[in-house]
Amino acid sequence: MRYKYYVESLADGRRIYLYRPTYLNKGIDFQVTVEKYDGAEDGRPSHEDILDDLKNKKANEPQIYLKLIEAITRVWNCEEPNVVMREYPGFNFTCGHSVELLLKALKWLFIEQDVTYWNYVGREKLMAAIKSV
Image: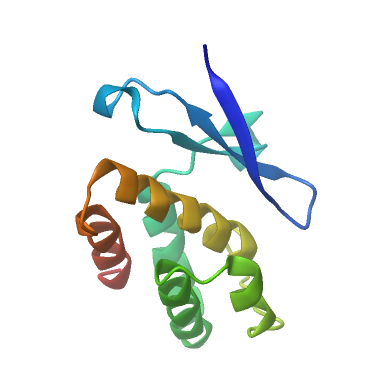
């Protein structure tokens, strides 16, 4: 049996949900899925998708990008994306995914890494990749 857990809602009406079990990590893992992601019915934002999006944002708008990294760091430190976003009003980029989608998806990707790799190893690996962009 497969399960869907709706965990976040986006301002545009789409939802983020967790899908489990997966076939990785003895079935204890889950997939982070976004409705209508990148034009598909539903899709999974991969670490690589997010890193590519961040690279484009950094190249196009480096000053705003620095604030985005601050916001991501706060989510990495377990602050709720909605709380973090309230402190960065008008946080818009001209390319890629919305900040809301990034922060809410990353929240669950960090959690997924916590489940997969204990003792913050996975969470730290993902954040190190983000900081190296």
